[in-house]
Length: 240
Image (cartoon, rainbow, N blue to C red; front, side):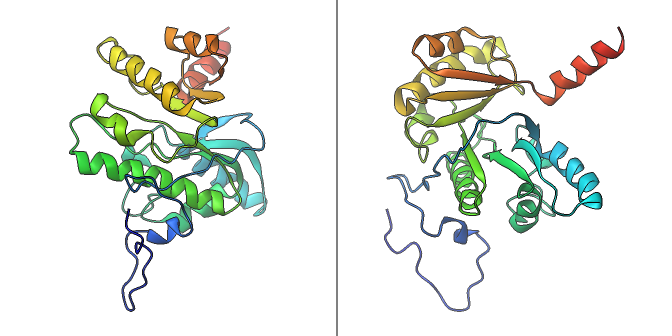
């Protein structure tokens, strides 16, 4: 770890969002620690796209509105990590929306298997850094956990406190795809061994054996429907 990482250099503009990590503790792999800040578990979880639409509608009526939901980022990256209004490129804009909601699940920046290692580590860093910064603003934060194959284990769980509440998204891919299920299960077991979470929040289906095994270990598993599942549930009731 570099003890001088916060050194101030006159005349240099912070284009790396280094300010987000001011006061943070760092792991041996230089990932900032993002404390879980939870007063109460989510009553509802919505995506960043849904949050933006809610903000657009409700802020017209009441600029100080509050919406009781956590925001998640289980979306294709371009929907929340763009150049113009992405949460990393424009964090102050993102905060202006997030502040009206109960909390966030930290961003799910992609760490695909075919990504170069430095990019996967950088996206893990960004998950924790953004979450840490949001937490400093007095907003509730739950860490998203994302892993790959075994060679990612040395860094992908870094920056998440043990015995805390963590979140996992299952709506976009593994463990839905059979070819990815073994990798997901191995990483899930490793996550439990390393983090010993007291509660696992699942955005998407939790109807997989690994979650039953977690319950057998005394871990609370809380499932929340994805935006797609909620849409089809509404459609199903409309057709009755």
